[in-house]
Image (cartoon, rainbow, N blue to C red; front, side, top):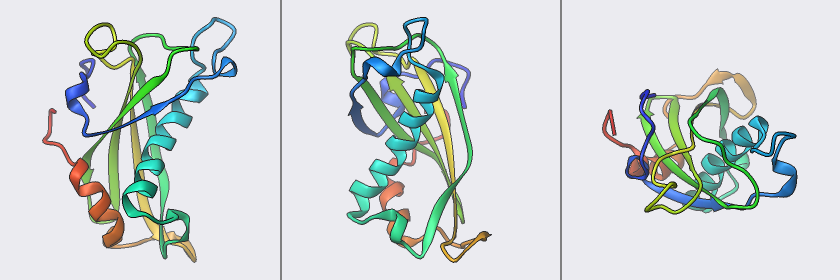
Length: 153
């Protein structure tokens, strides 16, 4: 991941999440665990919508091999969060996603990400999760290919 704070233009697909009172921690900003929930939801909701199927029922399933988050600015209740999604690498048996979390006016303080997550899915046989599947299933590949961005974008 780049060390710079990403702009909205770094992402291809978008969805919006509603924040809840319970999302904030005792300091009044979004709890760290909620960031990871949002990152996971952005990826899997996109896969569900783009494939038109319940991805948990495919013969090859994506398991999370890595997830991380870099924080740039506080977020919290009650404002919604825009989630930008891009694929930085579509490999033989894995997909590396970047998820930008934005809050606020897209032309103002919400123009730059408040956080960016990295999320890696490795595809495994649904009957033997220890065995990676090669290649990434065609249905999944077709859903994520439009999200692939050039390095550095």
